[in-house]
Structures are given as structure tokens and as C-alpha cells.
Length: 112
Image (cartoon, rainbow, N blue to C red; front, side):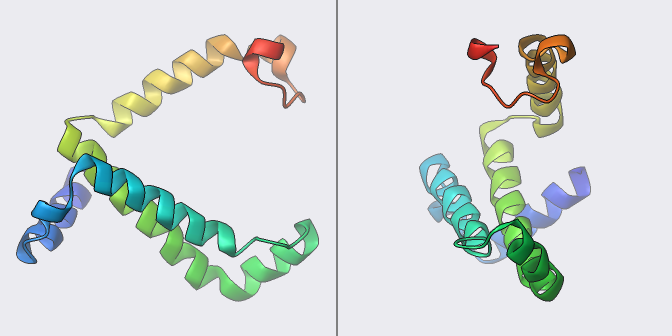
């Protein structure tokens, strides 16, 4: 992960883009790229989505990577250890969604 973050920083810094990469702008970019990912599935049912994935996996992979790159840079710029943040959130979710009540149930934890 550290090598990946270093590569993202180098890409950004080689182009003098840090001045554009404020937390607000990066958060917007995460959302915009996630929306581009969603476009691949818009108006498709599950079967059509599965076929689309088979034929457009490279393009979908690009959008997933764009989301991840911006999220990694946002985390790095804010001093957030993304690995630790994910582990912490999973701990919270395990508490909020105990298997005994959440298994097979899509309800929000406040409704379990």
C-alpha cells in the first residue's frame, strides 16, 4: 500500500497538481468517479448487468481504480491510515450488525 501511495504522490507531484487536490476537490472526485462507475449499471437489471460486466470489464476496472486512487490520495492528504480506518469501521459494523440479527437481512442497524 505504501508503494502505491508513493506512486500516486509522484504522479500528482510530477504534474504540479497538489494545488488542485484539496480535501473538498478530492471528495468531489471520489463521488464523480463513483458516479461514472454507476453509469455502467444504470437502467440494467441483474442479468443485463452481468452481461455488461463480461463485455466492459476493462472500463469498469478503470472506474474502480479512479475511485480508489482519489480515495487513497484523500486519505493520505488528511493523514488517515486507510487500512486502520477500514479495520476500525469493520469493528463498528460487526458490533452494529451481529450475525444473529443481521444474517440475510438488509435492514439498517437501527432497525434490527
